[in-house]
Image (cartoon, rainbow, N blue to C red; front, side, top):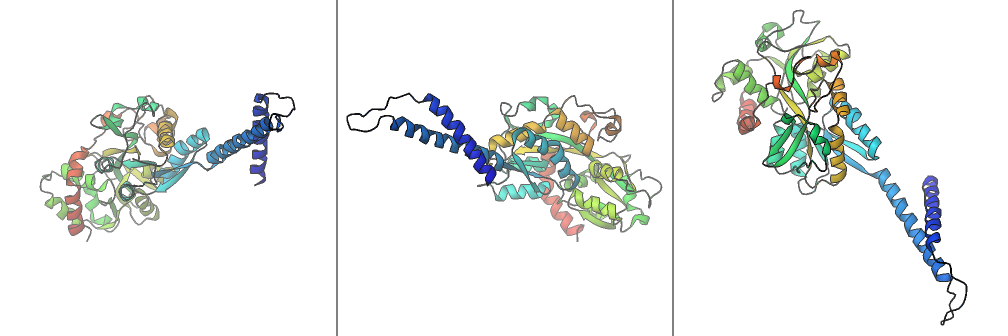
Length: 385
């Protein structure tokens, strides 16, 4: 309170001094009504000074209290978004960032529930869920004039619906095989290895509640030679997989591998390398059949409460510094052009030390989303039970 009073006093003095210099000098004398003429400019000066000081004070308090809400993922993802984007943004603008932590699917559900009066300003969501959000009408258009760093992006990282850009990429990641190096001495080489009897009860794969779950089903169908129009043979095979868990979030998968509940299964390169870097007995491989990839995207929420500040946040996220930081902390393949990273970081990116986004197998999300409801329903009836 004393600091606020000090600030208000300083602003009042500054305002009074400024406006006082502007006030005309008047010799004291009586006008026809007998009023002291000099009293009016003095009172006007004091009044204006008070108003100006009050305005300056309110701007100061507003800058202190100003905040935006950004929906992002939990665990090391959220920590990296905070360090690489939110903290530099707050340092540059003075605007605090409140995190709304959840998966892409939970974030989309919130945006739909809050459609008439959203509390979220910016949302990170994965590919696939991003397109569903656009179809649900909860996203605002991203304008290059307000977000000039959009010019730094790879062409693959700009997502349009007609002429409107509804999302931009913040980095690419892949889903590969993760395993416990103490329990499994010979690294697995194939997705087929998940069905080996020695791993029964200790396998982890994503559920449809995770943004990777439905595309994982379609990916397995492709590599196992199952007709994409008839997935029953694949679901029959998945129902026989003896699992420790179907994970709904990356954090849940990380916890399972860390605790030893799961010793083999699917996981993102981001989560697996985080465990490896922390000294956990974990390995990560790209199976011989390959791995699929997608990206974490940024979205401006339609009718969000702080549009200009939200646009500034997205602009900060699209700098080379932010992309390099995310690549170093999460091993996200940069969506920003020309980003250089250390050799040890480069080999852990989804495209490896010498590759690029052109080496990734990216999904046709319109096809995936068209089948999402049916696949989820069949999964719940035949696999999750």
